[in-house]
Amino acid sequence: MKIKDAKKPSFPWFGMDIGGTLVKLVYFEPIDISAEEEQEEVESLKSIRKYLTSNVAYGSTGIRDTHLELKNHTLLGRRGNLHFIRFPTHDLPTFIQMGHDKNFSTLHTVLCATGGGAYKFEQEFRTIGNLQLHKKDELDCLVKGLLYIDSPSFNGQAECYYYENAMEPEKCRKMPYNLEDPYPLLVVNIGSGVSILAVYSKDNYKRVSGTSLGGGTFLGLCSLLTGCDSFEEALEMASKGDSTRADKLVKDIYGGHYERFDLPGWAVASSFGNMIHKEKREAVSKEDLARATLVTITNNIGWIAKMCAVSEKIDRVVFVGNFLRVNTLSMKLLSDALKYWSHGQQKALFLEHEGYFGAVGALLGLLDVD
Image 1 (cartoon, rainbow, N blue to C red):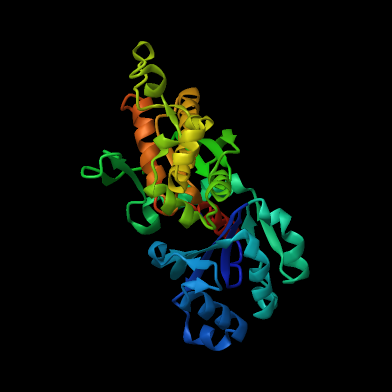
Image 2 (image 1 turned 90 degrees about the vertical axis):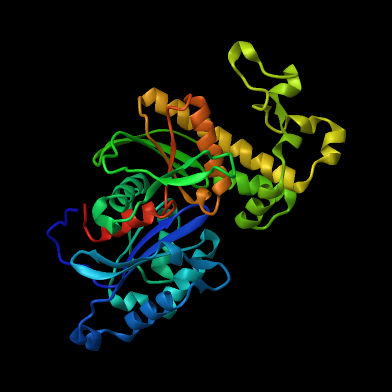
């Protein structure tokens, strides 16, 4: 980790990634505060630190992911705890108002933010919260945060993993993967939509593809088809459903395998293809529709990722983004799909802090850390 020669910014230290669906916030809580610092610390800073670290929920939608917290972490010569907080983007005005109410602007700090919302909501930050945003490119922050979090100096714990025997419940195991020498790497960032990056070094990467069919599509379609109100509810329904009731499989068309092109009978030939038949529409459940939606979106992402890996001649593919939060089902589907399409030569890789890399990159940008 390289630290540029610059004056340390004032506390508090935040990094924000304002996405289309979720805001991800990384907060560094110093725990090495001297008696002199504590005496000089203003009440508004104490109030903010106490509020963020004493709660695991904020209002009705904000959540601190305590299982991801990194304790006793050293950053820019200071020792502290790194907290990971998320809330829906539609509640961002409440966050800005909270900053106003807690006199955040009197601390003379700069918020470093990335994501489309850093541009969309810049005026609200300025007029309501009297806060200045330092905007950073979201793909730069994604790569910077990912490489920093997976570096051996970060927390000494395995960040990267894969699933062995993903679709066999009794044999499935979560296995650590050594990503110490990561280049080249294909990064598939699944948020509301999907961006795919080919990373050749920490300073050499490019966006090679993407798709508008991402986590936002899954939740939007599930809301329309099932009436669900949240991502967690949609996943819960999908876990209980049978996608083959909605999807048309190869065996439904060929009566078995399509042997000439080595297509197994269980492969999906047409997503939601059975829904053209009235009797099958009447028999399908909301859970089946949720599962079919999840399978459709996940398979599409997996196939695009596979084709990008072939095009860029990259063997290692890592999937990140908040679509994968509490979404073990999609991770296992991606694992199985990549294994099948690559004839066992590729693994789908995942990272513990899946949706927070952009926010971490923004924090590092605030601190001028490479």
